Amino acid sequence: MSNIKDFKEVGWNLDNSYARLPKTFFSLLQPTPVRSPNLVILNHSLAKSLGLNSDALESEDGLAILAGNEVPEGAEPLAQAYAGHQFENFTMLGDGRALLLGEQITPDGKRLDIQWKGSGRTPYSRGGDGRASLGPMLREYIISEAMHALGIPTNRSLAVVTTGEHVIRETNQPGAILTRVADSHLRVGTFQYASRGCPVEDLRDLADYALDRHFPDGMNGENRYLFLLQEVIKRQAELIAKWQLVGFIHGVMNTDNMAISGQSIDFGPCAFMNTYDPATVFSSIDVQGRYAYGNQPYIAGWNLARFAESLLPLLDEDKDKAVKLAQDEISRFTELFHSHWLKGMRAKLGLFNEEVEDEGLIEDLLSMMQKYRADYTNTFKALTFDTVKKTELFGTEEFTQWNERWQERLSRQEQSNDSSQDLMRRNNPAIIPRNHRVEEALEAAVSREDYSVMERLLDALSNPFEHSDKQTEYTEPPEPSSRPYRTFCGT
Image (cartoon, rainbow, N blue to C red; front, side):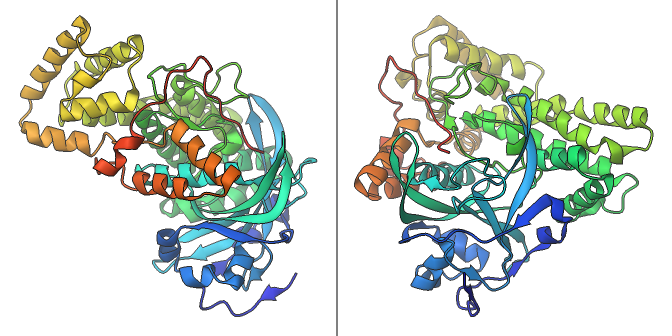
C-alpha cells in the first residue's frame, strides 16, 4: 500500500501516542484495500472542527483515505488489544474490524482518535471477516450525531463510504467503512487486558497514559491511580444519568464498551425508548434483560467495579488496603449517579431549587407513565407546553392529583412560570431518533440507495431542543405492533 505524502490541503495533523505504549497493547497493520469506494455521507461541521478540508476529503485522494485504500503521512494504523466481560463472561478481545488511523491534533489543540470501522481483518478478528455492512454503519452515524446534539458525551462520525463489495451476514449486504472520532478508545476492557495478561509495569504505563491524556491534573497527586478511578467513576455517573434522562438504551454494556473518557461508544443494538417501561430491552441478544433501560445504572456500577479490580496492583502495595480504597470509591457511584439524575429530572419538570419531596413527585410521574403506557419523550414535551390532553395520562384521576402537586411545587420557587418553561424547553427534547424513523432511513439507503430520507432525519435531529415545525413528523411514536422492536449488533 502506498503512503500519500502531501495532504497538507486536507489538514491531517496526526500523532500516534498510543503506538508508544508497550507493544502488547496493539498490532501495527494496514487496512485492507477495497474495490470501488464511494462516499455516502461526510460530516462537514465535524471535519471543520478537526481542521480538515471537506472539499479535499470529498476528492478522489480524500476518499481513498476514508476507504482505507491510502494512508496519510504521519499515520501508524493499529488495532488495539483489549478484553471484556460480555454478559458476565470474561473474554480476551481486540479491534476485530477496526483500525486506529492515528490521533488528529485539532486547531484548538485537542487530541482525538480517528478510527476506521470495517477496514478488514486484524489479529483479533477471531474468524470474522473484519468488514462491516452499510446499514449498521449508517445507524452508528445517525445515533452518534443525535447523541451529540442532545448534549451527551459520545464518539462522533466523520464519514461513511461504501466499498463496492458485499459482506455476508444473513444475506449479502453492501459493505461499508465508518470513520469515527473519539476522545480515545481506552476502555475498561483495555485495563482488564493489562491486569490479566501483562506485567504490572505495562498496567502502570497504560494508567499513566490514560491520566496524561484525560486527567492530567492527577499526574502529580498523592495517589494518581486512585484519582484515575475517582475521575472515571465521576464521568460514568454523569454519562449514564444523561442516558436515562433521554430514554437511551445502549443494548450491550459489556466492559469493553465502556470508555475511560466518559463518552458513549460502540453503538450496536442501541435504541431510544418510546413507551416508558424500565424493563425495556431492544437487543436481540439480551434475552435475559441484563442491559434493560432500568438496569443501566446497576450495570455501570458493576463495570466500574471491574475497572477498580484491574487497578488494585497500582492503588496500594498492601492488597487489603487497595481493596478498601477501591470499594470506598465504587460505593460512591450510586450516589453520584442519583444526584445527576435527580438534578436532570428537576430540570425536566422546571424546578430550579431542591425540596425533599421532589423525588416522590418524579417517581409518581414515572409510575403513572408506566401504568398508562405513556410515551417518555412526548410526555415531558407535553408538560413543557401544557398539551397534556394529547397524552395517555390526560383525564386520569392520578394525573389530576399529581398535576396539582406539581403546580404547587412550581409556585414555591422564586422563578417565574416563563423561566420554568424555558428550563423545560432546554431539557426536554422535541425529537429523538425514533427507532422506526431510523429503520425507515436505513431501508431507503440500503435497499434503494436513497440517502435523502436519512439526510432529512439528520437535519431534524441536529437541534433537538429547537421545537420547530420541521421536527413534528418525527415526534410521533410508531403504530402499535404485536411484535416487539428488536435491534441487532450488525457484526
